[in-house]
Structure formats: structure tokens, C-alpha cells
Length: 72
Image 1 (cartoon, rainbow, N blue to C red):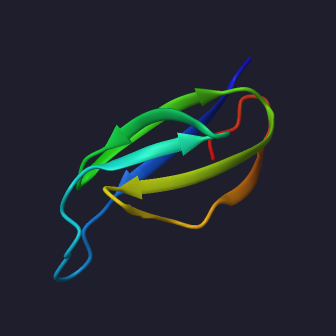
Image 2: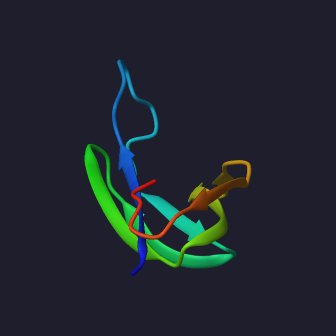
């Protein structure tokens, strides 16, 4: 059974980054999320990396663990 990576792009106050964020999981494109939307991405259990990109801007790479059947 897979795990689920759930990402939400939520506006807070006067949001300046209104565009779509591209999702990079484990160094590979994994989809995108629009403002005020949520996306669920099935992933294998284990350790993963996550980065978000918007044009030439990108977040720092974060590492996380996902257990079988878990939503992270």
C-alpha cells in the first residue's frame, strides 16, 4: 500500500505569489498545485525529498519520511 503526499497552496493575507507551484519529489517532477487548491500524490513508503518551484524561485529541499498508508 502506498503513502500519500498532500500539499495545499493556501493564501494568507495579501498573498504575492498567486501562481502555480511546481512540485518536485525525489528530484522528479510530481505535479503542480494552484492557489487555494490541494493535491494528493501517491508515494512509496520511506524517506523522500520535496521542493516547490515557481518560475526561477524555489524552496529549500526538505526531507520527510512516509509510512505505509500514511498521509503526510
